[in-house]
Image (tube, rainbow, N blue to C red; front, top):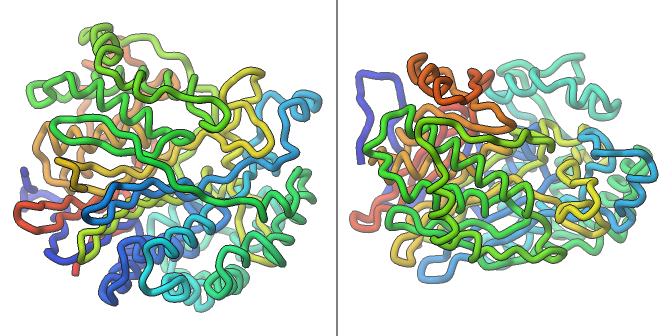
Length: 527
């Protein structure tokens, strides 16, 4: 792999021959590493990290959100866990039509689906854990009780999106307690959330989905016009599924199946697999990625839904004959058409990658969807609620049309790269709609251009979405001019695209090679 030039700014890869964690917050990485040092399973380390981030990075994730994971125990078959929650049973399409709605507002109670993260965490710890839920949640509880210092990227995002909690009085009183977002280095505590986490640590999922916490969430949502009831929460359970996969450059990329957008990532990488990226210039690579994204996302937006309601033929969509026809229609000298995106856009998620001493690997991702989710805050229990239901369609006959008990289309996707049937890299790329493209971009930088995981992480990013090709400002003016000459409508990114965490398992040398995105505050660290 190509390593960095030490005369230029940047970051070296993390290295270890034992165990490693990579997260977007330094304290979360430390929490995961502490669990690994105590002999915990990779899953326990990942949940310790993400639970802590639910406290210290509350606009990105929380226990009021959802969780997906891919776990690859050494010598076993990777298993996907779907911890996304459904719409309340009373949320049927005719209700919204009768009320004159054409979309679900992202800050309304109708956007709040049952949070699935807590049940997913409990299920994962029960299946794989050694230390137990109380130990796993300890760092999050301590930070919520004692308070924590706000890091630079968290402060930046908090101030940028403060308006999302300012719309709801309980959330405003808590998250903007000084009349503004907390600044870098200020301390912030969440005592009500600490109490809820303590109950979950003692009692498991029932502490969240039944009793006082569930009653607080339901009462808060009903007061905002929601259709939720206690049975919606009590009846929820995360579930395991088989991962879906596709070949890329001698490897296989594994993703969670729908209702997530992992299928789009697989289709994009299948399209890219037919190109020799190493022989292309930067403008050509960005162009091909943009054209593949258009096709992958068009398929995604038309088809991906709760598979229990509409079956999706994954094998047919990834078949080489189908993909080859897509490649044939991709012109190198001009941009193809793309329909504008009409659904919600978000950027706010956390992703964690962990490999333990036994080479068990996990990629786990947790989200409340928009910044601060719906902005609706159940104050007594300290739970900020997601707005994943804003991703439902209100179009009659659409596969992703809202229905009671139905899972919405999901953007969050953990990734796992394998080779010869063995896990070689758990990874994730947070960033909402960007994630599927981000998976393909990371892999092309590593497997086509030969960059080490950190350099691949730091490479300039681009993203075609909604008819516009967004370019990070590290891309040259000459490249932008080339792309515009091909017909792309371009713009400079107003903020970084995504945030990636990955751990490459070099099986020949027995070494773990970790990366953490410079676009966030985090770090990869090994023991």
